[in-house]
Length: 426
Image (cartoon, rainbow, N blue to C red):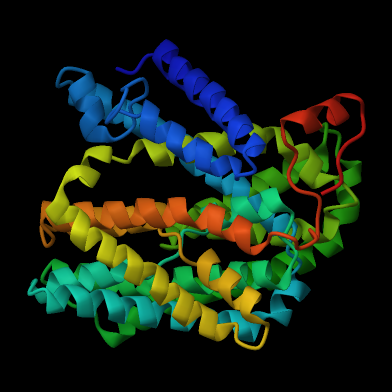
């Protein structure tokens, strides 16, 4: 079985390497997240092998002991999930419900077009190349959902979480996740030879929409009504403790109804956004952020098998799929942001482009159902990786010269201010 020492050693290596790489990329005027992702690629089981995350590679590392490999893999999955949950909770703290409602209609248009256009492009390309219909459907589905964690990190690092573009992206990401869940459920049923009735599809959509609206509206009302009682609790840092408990609880509920756990975490942050400044919730959450969020990106990077980039036949179609994946979001999501100016259109389109772990989830579903071959699986992996790596520098370039709405997340040098008691304002 996985030993405590082995897990702690991997966490130490990942954390130290992530911070060193983040420092290097900050000095190069690039987002730290790029360095963290590349650290995962280099240290992962497909390169140096200093850390092992994907289950198959872990089983090999443990000389065929599947139980030990799967135990290690599940530990890293939990760490990664906690990291992205904390990230989206902090982003939610920057997003008041009134601000989100202000861009709600536009965010809805962005989300719908951002699902339709990439799906059609992906399906058309794979079908035109002569692949079976079910493969084309799965590739189109993999191009649908946005992995908002990457974009959220870049926006936080640049201090642009409170801008209209960020709110459109975050609002669209919630709707996008609901739509993607419905599409994936239908496609998975088709792949397994089954079928979903219109009633079952409506039930899936209804649960997701009801959960989102209930948490956003009822949660905000509850926090406003009961926040005065937080100060009466005897436990230390009671407001922050309650906020973290709500974050974990809503993330759990979100996952149980089929949504991504990060949607629940984002909604929890949005509920407590009204109390953000009163109880310094962001400042208190920063230690969690500094520990867990870099680990999420390192672990995400460690899933990348760089050898896939050496196979010309796979790389060719993967690059074509990647280009269409980015163009699909630029055209679809960008069209929903028309009227805000070309820079905002580009930011929204690019911000919705990362597929990250969401694309990998779709690929794994298709592979587990034996409806996509290894070549198509590898294509989705490469597309997910490239869209994840391309977005941070492009977003940084698009925001160049634009004043930040908030002070960026603390970097290494900012910790001296924290040590002196001068907490940086977010």
